[in-house]
Length: 136
Image (tube, rainbow, N blue to C red; front, top):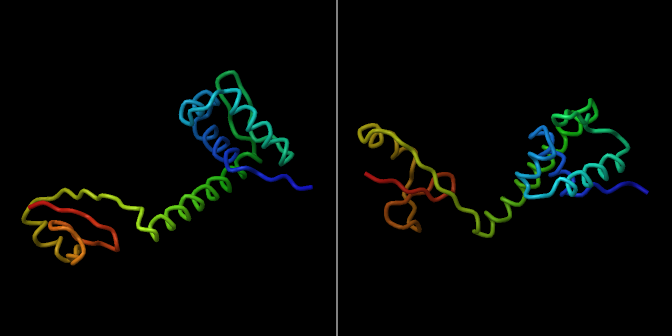
């Protein structure tokens, strides 16, 4: 029977690696140290590899941990990207871009960058499908 890595274990692992400590990762993830420790322990047991070297002042990745970290980060980024893609297709994803520049430069450059969309409210344009607003 193969071990099924859970998303929460990947998130816990990546955050602990980035923070360098279980306590720091716990603060970021809003999880207790025992909950994070349990997730990491289950992950290490499931993949049959030690991922961290535990020290009194935090943790460092083992060689296996470094390799796994690269993969885990990519997996989480792909998952986030897939979720964003679905939200965008459903019209639920929007954002705001603020660009600061002088008025004379803005009048020269921005028309080439922003095409006014007939569906956008006044004072807004579209750039690669995302609504953005601009002020004179």
